[in-house]
Image 1 (cartoon, rainbow over the protein chains, first blue to last red):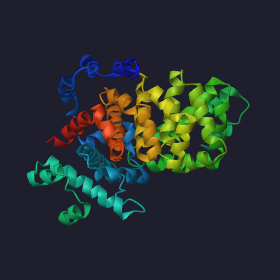
Image 2: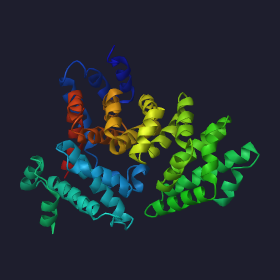
Image 3: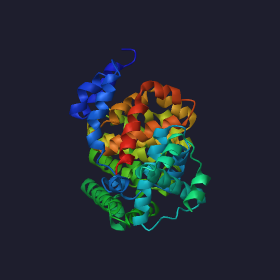
Image 4: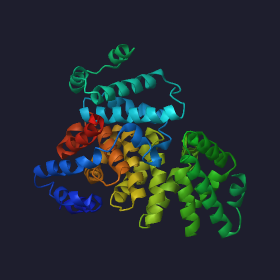
Amino acid sequence: MTQKVTSWLSGSEFVLEENKTNYAKFPKTKLSIIVSILQVEPFILKHKPGAFAHSASVHFQGKSDDWLKKLVPMLRSNSRQSQSLAAFHFAMETAVKKEQNNLKVRGSKGILSYIIVGIMLFLAINTQNKVLERLYINGQVRSNYWIRGFH
Amino acid sequence: MKIFIGKLTSESESEQTDALDDILHSLKNAWTTPQYGRNLAYTLCDALRTEGGLKTIIDNSASSIYKILLGSARVLSQCLTGPNRDYLVALDDGLTMVVEMSNENRQDPAMLSATTGVLEGLFKHSESTCRKLVELGGLDLMMFSCRSQDQSTLRNCAMGLANLALYGSKEDHENMLKAKIPEWLFPMAFSGDDVVRYYASMAICALTVSREIAPLIDKSGTMALVSLFYLQNILMP
């Protein structure tokens, strides 16, 4: 009760019905987490960055330059998950900005570079390039290295 | 837009609410217009500010008439572009008025949906604004809204917390952890709505970037789940 578990479990009301049971058991065993992941997997396999940008109106116009700058540290994060998400977002953002004919990000050469890095990261995984993937997984990503390699 | 703004100060309550509805409709149409929507929406939002409509709408935060209060909150949630955020933050008691309105009406689902949208926009203003919003109770409201079953509210909540994680200071991040925000974000990372799922995960990831607090988040086990979500997206052929 001190950990507010009951309040926390109330959140499961809006989890997919099929996940509810397993998710609610999360505090008891990690096995339930794995089960929950497997159940979610078919759902999330539907998404690609470009298509995701068109899936909801909140993504239609993309994010501001300022917001994207705030996302840059995630690309340099030691956390593979954070890097993946940032790369995914920059890939999505590029699709949006390309449609708007607005690929040039104002006021910062750095941001555009990082968008390229994001795309490189995305392509590295997407094309199953094992060398790039290994570099990516090992966290050996350095923006200058990738940009030089890209050109 | 000028005609609608003019009606905002009408003495007739119905004219005011109609004008708010019309402005909201115009803004929503602009934001959902492909390709040129951003420029269009920014133009409308600039007009709203320069013609005095934004000031009236902010002042309406203290209105005792529910329809005007709700209409104003809805318009505010759609018009917080960068310059309009600057304007609101620079106003005396601008943030206080907005957060007070949000907290006072948190039990009303329609108001909660609108006010979380307002806070979501304000959380991407600056570090100092984030600090003030948290002090005023903005984080409490976002935490409260995590329990909502309304899609729009949950989206605002997830995006707002992601914005706070990105724009907030180390102190704000610590406050987020004290409020057990990662635990509230956890079920949202498994929501049936992709947008909620995406930004809830974004918020968790943004929090991990701060090394000092990363171990606390890892303890929750959430990152392992976030990982699979995005790797599966990226690995898709």
